[in-house]
Image 1 (cartoon, rainbow, N blue to C red):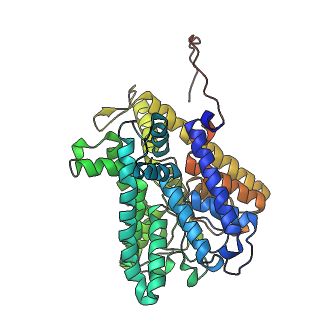
Image 2 (image 1 turned 60 degrees about the horizontal axis):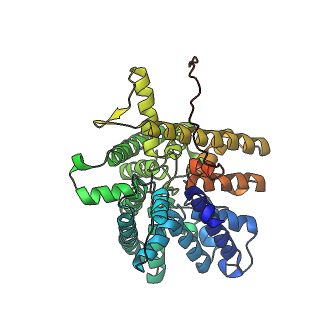
Image 3 (image 1 turned 90 degrees about the vertical axis):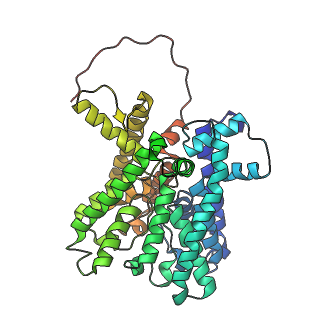
Amino acid sequence: MLKRLSRTQTIALGFFIIICIGTLLLMLPIASRSGTITNLHDALFTATSATCVTGLVVVDTYQHWSLFGQIVILCLIQIGGLGFITIGMFFSIFLRRKIGLKERNLIQESLNGLQLKGVVRLVKNIVPWTFFFEGVGALILMLRFLPKMGFLDALWYGIFHSVSAFCNGGFDLMGRYEEYASLVFYYDDIVVNLVIMSLIIIGGIGFIVWDDVSRHKLHVKRYLLHTKIVLATTAVLIIGGAVLFFLFERENLLADMSTQGQVLSSLFGSVTARTAGFNTTDTGAYTQATRLLMVALMFIGGSPGSTAGGIKTTTTVVLLLIVISNLRSRPELNIFGRRLDEDEVKKASTVFLINLFLAVVSVTAICAMQPFAMDDVLFEVGSAIGTVGMTTGITRDLTLASRYIIIMLMYCGRIGSMSFALSFLERKKQAAIKLPKERITIG
């Protein structure tokens, strides 16, 4: 039966199995500080959030989970961030096992690779580079946390937050200071902010971009079109998001902060909204304009083949190019001296519409079941489907039905909404005869 599964079905099933294992481990008495069994719903929500690198929580990670529970969560974040296919294939390569065509196709699907060639070399590079970035981040954070904690606590906090940031997980252990505090106590700390933001960005630009940049260094002209689009779009979203965040919150959350705090909070808010889930300011106190900005950034997310979620930066660019080309009456989509294939247009439109449909249906369903303000629900749904993890504070008040909607959205957001849809559809052969064409009126 397993041999009959398609690549998308294999990936979807794999993540489902990991979530189930994580749920069972988190239900063990040893996983909670109280030494009691955590109920199924809380354990499942946490395991899904960790595996899908989201960060939404129904219990405080530090105050509820023991060291064993925190280790389970961290492992789920690492597996979810890199992808179980990548980790499995890396160990196969390490053990010198032969990687066949089927396995290479699976790697390509898992990493959203552009071509089959070079996927094994890509896997060889991904895991070592991941541990390198996470290790450097953990060391710097440990040194920063050390004055306030003992050595072992500082080391564990450094490792946990570095992995969580790089994998865009959004889980934190700052509940030791205040429940659900995230990084608000470090809003003006340059070291913590820069390290966390750097890890989020590096993890969110994608493995394909890493490989391309490492091979061509600063020779930008040699970069793949994919790399150019990702880097340019990421820069625009970070800077643009930070400027808008500052403008929307200068009279609100940023009013009593120093200039350094305002700059760091604006940048951090822009970076984390695109799928990281940490926060250095009170998300529940955002202005309406900031909430809408955050929903837009969460919906876009990171880049393909990365630890991030959302519809992705490349999808957003393609959709914008469609609008621009239609307004200019140009039949082709051109960018950076290259022409995009029609398949990219179809995929981008499909991903956008599926995510939009899921968001609208989910917001409607939750609003129908619970008396929340629609902007709070929209924020929560956008956070779940974009695997972000930010919340205005309603996560813990969700009913079981609402929680399971959020769980499904996190799952869809991690494996990809289109992949999730394809996992239920059989691939049918195209008909040899095409139907007659007829025009309709649009707009």
